[in-house]
Length: 277
Image (cartoon, rainbow, N blue to C red; front, top):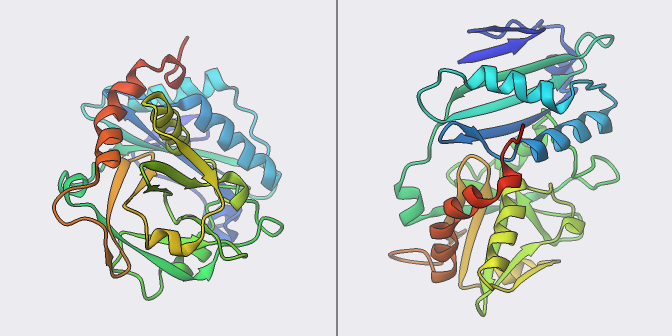
């Protein structure tokens, strides 16, 4: 692992235990990854990172070109694809602490894409936007820890919003298929605007799959024909079972497979998803 802090790279994090991010969760983060040594959608991650810092009132004054210089230094010389985590905390309350760490990508087991994952639904609701905006990607994960209670055997836990509509997972966005139409909770539901979520919507439309972004009732998840999750580190993850309901026995449904098969080639041809000098 390589760690960047205060303008220097090292092999370990040396952040003070008095840092307000450590003590109070006053910090935000982004998780990026590489494909064949190239950083995926860095501009969108940078803009979302800066937005989150602004919501908390933490000044982040690193320009995009400098941001990319730091990240490229971090992945230089790596022999496999990487996970890149950028973090900014409130530091000592006077000076923010900007931290980047790079580690080998923990690629999901290939069987995950063949056999899918099991997901559950939390009894806890997503915090309302008037309390913590959904656009904020904070290092404080107390609500996620609460949501996992009693659901530890599931790969992912889905959250409902305060009005009872399906929102998102703790680490992913959700899609499902009804009558060959692809449906996902809208941003107005109170979800993070996932970058892979956005790419999958664009991909589906390019393949002439109808996409609906709207409010989603829980019962729709138990009547759909297919379901999958999206997240930066793993792209598209088919859902085999939601709670006790089995969605597929031997292989993911046709729409899910079609999107999975086309994802990598699609992102590689999208020049806007890669850093351009």
